[in-house]
Image (cartoon, rainbow, N blue to C red):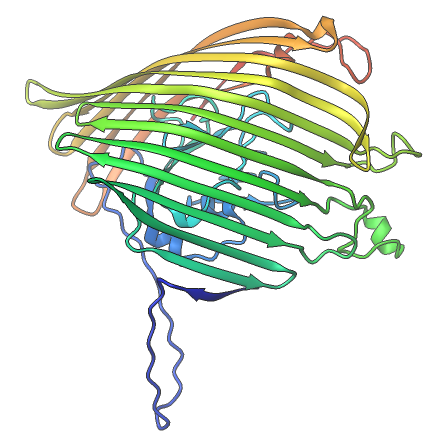
Length: 478
């Protein structure tokens, strides 16, 4: 349980009368976004800052549960990426749901813990202005990891007023958030920060979370364009409980909140700088991201190594560079209005180390596999929306992606390069029945990339046996 101790932006008043009967006041917050005539499917929507502010969140990743049908869980430590489920899809840590933040990708390719790894712990919910989500692969602007859907987080450009708040809860929970605006000539600089600690309810460990986040966003508006320059910083360390054997609890060796390996946990950081510029006809964004993760886990305890134990460390250290150029154009063909959205997208993952090590109490014993990877992608996309009549709207989308990888492994047989390309087609129709109802039908293709190491592998580094490589790109349909 968490308690809000103070908030400088919170205003409240109450009046009580002794002779009044006590009637509990229940406030229900509704949400209505009129997307009739704007959305291409019934499974897309917009979440605003007012919705986010009203819901208590235990973890930042739970902000995705605003997406209907999304379930967010955590199975090992508060600093690790969540596990996601959407309408029956087990998305693991983000394999088939694409997430971006003001155009910056959050899903990680060829990651040390898992393909598509999506860590949202760097996000401060109070700094999110809106979330645009789409379930299904129906838009060409969405590429890798978007078979089940996608979501884009938009950050605040300015705050209504400066604020600060302190939250205190059980098990050593302490969190503080503050933000304000600074005038820079006729422009605005929004700045904010978050700090959190938490020990958790565990018997044998303290989570000892030490999370720090920083946010700064410069906004400059002219008569015909808006420029944003955004810095985000995040650093976290934690200890974690993990899955435990039922028989260990039943025998009394540990209780339900106990741990067999009290040295699990990790460290993570993420720093980014992004530039977004938009006019009526153009949108340009570019970004640079630095990301590191050291994650210590132990799923089998003493099964493989009865003496030293089965603890292992997963390492990921990378820089990501990329951007998108988008052009908007509207015209008329006969009596129909046609809206065109076309663009180019590129991304480069410079992975200096992605590795797996055998460890004992967080001390490395021997490497299982250690690689460096260069991963490049370029894409072109076109979306065509046609107002066929006042009530009938159609869209046809096409996207082409090219991905190339170069793997340098500590086992030379597992080094190599590969490339692949894929074309995705999407389309649909919608009909406006009245001011409150619109019917949709859509079909689409998308894809997810596989780990570059799996695309060039020859030998299983754990067993020494021959291994079969996998396809670099895998199609999905919806």
